[in-house]
Image (cartoon, rainbow, N blue to C red; front, side):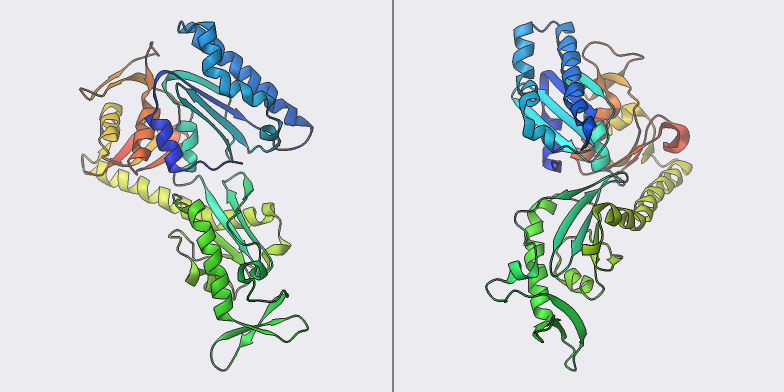
Length: 381
């Protein structure tokens, strides 16, 4: 599976021209139904061809533009490793494919910008979290959403304490013992009586933390630790990740499957996500109730504010579009009752610019947007 970073998202947002093709589809990870993946994708490509021809693109130009995406059909390795959803983007001078832990609706969008709203749950307040399962024999990082979990390959992270501390430490299995008279935790190898102080565990976890930094560098999502109780505070001492949660999964994680770890972690992060979202909704109502201009449900004001970097929090409806045009030179927004040639989904545009400027976007069911409006936002100023 692939990682979609904020830099990747920024690259997608920055692309503009004739034409940008966004393809979304659900994917099957395993079993007999995996053959449906290529069939679905082939059908999406056919729809993209039809859409491009409908905007008067010549057939040879269509084939040239879609060439990198079409080549995926013959890449057996690509299809062997899928997430819950596949997103592919093709434009002049740009191609990107992302196998992600999100289940997308089938969608083809041909426009002058990429359509990125289906990706936003990975960057919103309730889309993504990590589980770091730690023992002295094994290290696993799991990437989860509410409905899925995937183990992340981490080539720069040691797989065990023995590997991390080689050549300092002979290979052995180690378990916890009581704290000694000096207050320094020591650990015994099975049957060997050898002692490993807390300082070795701390070094081990510092090495793990360094290996995780590149992968987590642009992440702003909760990280849940899983491990026996004496290891977790030591890892917290070593960790440099700002979004590490205090509550963890206590016990030997080597005895738990990825699915079991996901289920236990979700019970920890669910109230964290719910609280953050509830606080923002309450703040919106508080500001709106006293006619504070920082609360707005005007789509025009929100689009303009998003491009200006003024939106702190944006609430948008899932699977709803509102078509129109934003004129960058004049900052004018024109909303149309139905899609016209050259139109953008203004909701998608506002969401993309909010994320690009460091704001938070909550993708909600349409009837859950605060105030019962199409969109709602909290402005920074």
